[in-house]
Length: 116
Length: 116
Image (cartoon, rainbow over all chains, first blue to last red; front, side, top):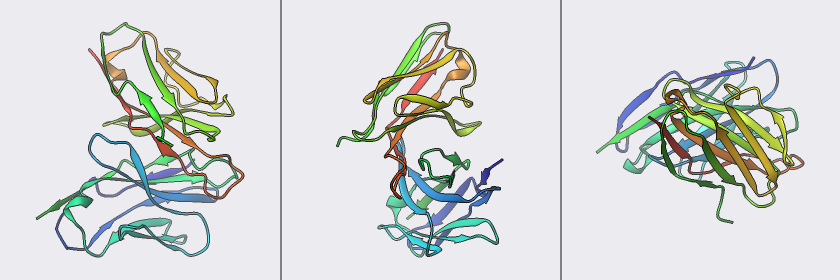
């Protein structure tokens, strides 16, 4: 069985402060890992993904995540957050079996609230 | 492309009524996924199709739920009869053929279903 655990359901932080959203996963097979973001009343948008190669992956808006196989983690970080980063963030995995990466198992989500 | 298109965006219905949710995937994508999002259970995969054929429907909660994909550009999720516990946001997602490395899922805006 596979699972994703997001340890924090809510993370409040002040603008321009650093943030880390934690994600741990469990799987008996090789996986792809993703972070999706959901703004209020919107669908999910892919933020970044780890497929293979470099364990540090980055998004275009300053987020980064590091795949750590030994700790089965894929934590999301940003050195300085903006008000516009306020959203819910979902960590997810897809089994690496050569099929679609849309067959996802999601964590419960972390609500990031950035305060001025 | 306009992205994954879902309709309606909001649906309010009475218990016992039939509800049909609709999805148009991104052109050229041959995988289609139906997810359900609730406060209690988070995001769950209900069913997915490849080339219009249902591949895995193990997430469909009950026989009251059914999904079809009559062609590559249209899918429906039907609930008959609906119950208050079916109230949730239902997302449709699509992804490209599995031959490539970038086969991540693209999500629609969701349909918020309320059963009263």
